[in-house]
Image (cartoon, rainbow, N blue to C red; front, side, top):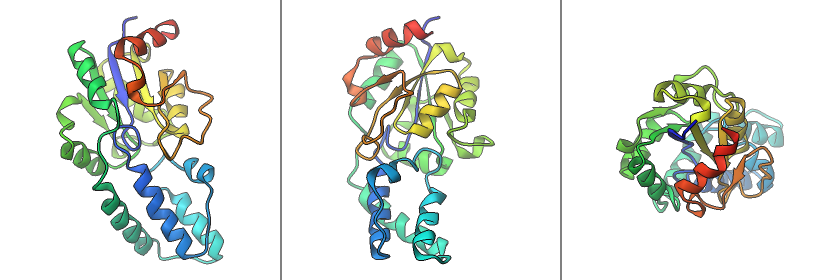
Length: 222
């Protein structure tokens, strides 16, 4: 079957929100005497924009409950401050443009909340390119459940064999594979330490391959 749609994760794939989040959390951890490895932090990503495991790590380290709302507000304020210097990641605009020129349908499927995703897409003038944006509020379970991708397929009116997913987290790749969609892993600065063994293809950046090359890689699996 011919390629008809591309489905993008958002955080760390379209915009590097994950480096600011990591820095904000690592600063908070350090203030409490906690060190977390790159691999451990990266393994938490993809299921939520506000990973509960981060709070649990801090509580386990302190052996006591913490004021989670206060920690959340502190981390978010710092993350937003750092995010001001981030731009759309390499190759994203070009691939979107090529996909539109080819008549493909486009979706975002993100475990983050709708307001977060739509606000940042709007700020970077990308929101109007997508035919559907599926977020945490739209499904019963976020990644690694396949629900977000299945909902995106439904909204786009395409089958799993007619789409390619672009992901930067292991949770996201697991979700795409569970939905039986060809999945391209695009590691970012935070997740590049992970192996991504289950991805169908690994790209250093989205810009590494053209739309035609992505389609050719996916064709044997479709």
